[in-house]
Image (cartoon, rainbow, N blue to C red):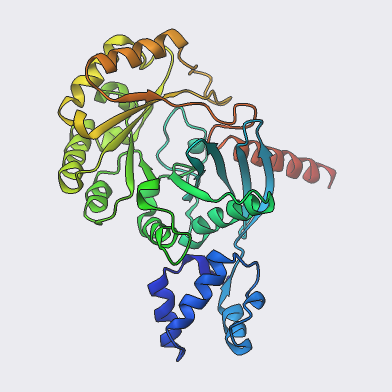
Length: 362
């Protein structure tokens, strides 16, 4: 299968051309066509020699995923279900805010982290996405926006879709360098956020990358007993070790970190738990923010329900009184399959039923 040209950083594409006897400036030409003019085929590159176009067509592809379905919410949220060339399904979401348009991208087919509340982890990881497959999600969304003729562009990216980004680290970093480059989409590093469930080694690595991309950590509990119960990763990478890595990140980068905290009714949403959380991060208050997330129910996880509004408000108020910067995430796309992994899971179930019915007829 041909490589996606979107997976090549600018420097890597320059090297590719030079190694094959072409001028390095060809990379600038090609990137201009890819990311500024957003072509759909190499043949559209009118200032590139035909022989070079043929070389590109032989070596690369512009399409490693197809739009299988798209849902559009009343609030403008778009959820894309993409089918990859190997038949696997992934999800990507466009969310519209007052400050711009944000895309949530997927980094893996399935997820091995296995958080007990998450639809993404219902199916274990079958493979990592390539850097090109991750970049191409952005390109598909941007082209869909172009078709609306609103002169709207992707301004923010959150790497919070299906999978654990730090479990696909090298492809993640290549993706970040492509979308951040001024020669390409030019999405500012401070407008990009990577979310991790807490792979400790990679937090240290990310701190040493010398980039200004934001980091979010899925915490969801203030102690080991509670966190291990809902996030099995905590058994191997406990909170005290996670906090040490975060301390290193804060000292090294002096950048604010976000703690993601999904509120589950009767599980982690009490006032006492809020006080424990405030105590856990008290020495990080100046460079941290807690993002409180109302739980989006998933059919397969019937043991969890969304926290009552009174509990959410009490939790928020308790953190604020302890000097913790926090906020409650506004729900987007509530009238579509908004929870990460839901649309993919439903389509896979439809595919299974269809295959079973076909087998029965035979």
